[in-house]
Image (cartoon, rainbow, N blue to C red):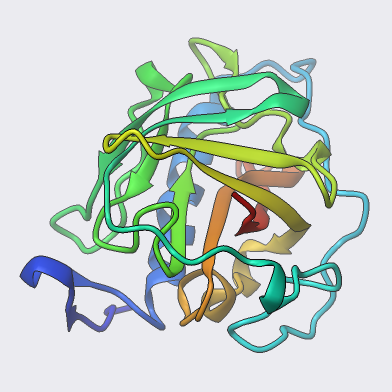
Length: 227
């Protein structure tokens, strides 16, 4: 599928409606590479408490427990993120900047660095108005459980803090955690417009398909700036 391109911030091209489909394809590839070398007895990641339904709400919503607009701070200026901290699951990881590959797919962290996560740089930075997107592996052959292995165990109200290069941390409150079949990735919710500062954290999850050596789903954390 050919992704559409639009003139982005600083003249960089970035995807809108087609972006999440491209992200999904990249994560499928990463999941297959990492999982294909795991043994049958390898541990499987925890999953969200509720499977996402077929209906996808409007672009500005993040789920049943979405933060109300009056509770959301004003968006921050653009600044590159440096680390992501998720206290509930013990994540304190370095963030690398990611772009797109020559074939149009979104880059993911190298499997040799599966303990790190990546920020999709052509989109908003964490804390800016709009949806910032951070992706990471769920497992890898070399490290076993990777940076976002436990992502599916987050619940509404948990916090995610992103440290930024300008010294202004952005702390987000989790609105919802959903699991989607990779064939039904919520494009608009992840990459669509948002008039609030949002965060989307994405990894692989769901049942492990032994036949194709890949996870069937993507786990997506929807969060809104809290401080």
